[in-house]
Image (cartoon, rainbow, N blue to C red):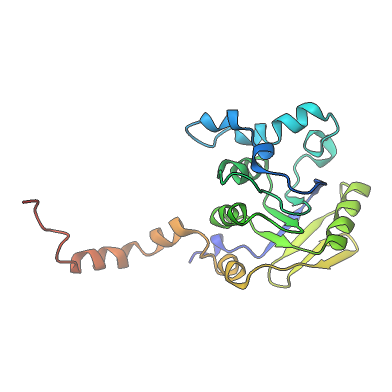
Length: 200
């Protein structure tokens, strides 16, 4: 695989989003699912929550440009819509740290190259508080060392080893793997006797 697909460290500003069981309907409301592509979804992430809460983190200029989203328990539950992680990623988020993630949401994030790391509740709260106290603090997630750091605070994070190795090796990128193996695929196709069969 190309090194460009490898995901080892993500660093940048953080954004804290406090609350358990934030579902995909809240992440991207159903009315935005009619789009043919995912273009523009980033502008609508948490649209209803942001309209109802003026001080929602995604409305605050101090968190604009954040790459690391720190959440609580069971984030991304509800429907299996891929639009939810797409909207988050298109807003600018490159990785998430939380207490737990809904399984399908987690899988969709892996397929997009967006790591979701798990930390205990105390560590998550400490990260959220560190970011609130200093929105300019550099937040770094290291998939090799399995740590999340915000300034002087470093906490351990976990991820299933299979998903972790996919990020470290770049094999999360299924399309990239196909492109990289184009010659081998062509040779295999040439050996398949039924590929050239004419329809009867």
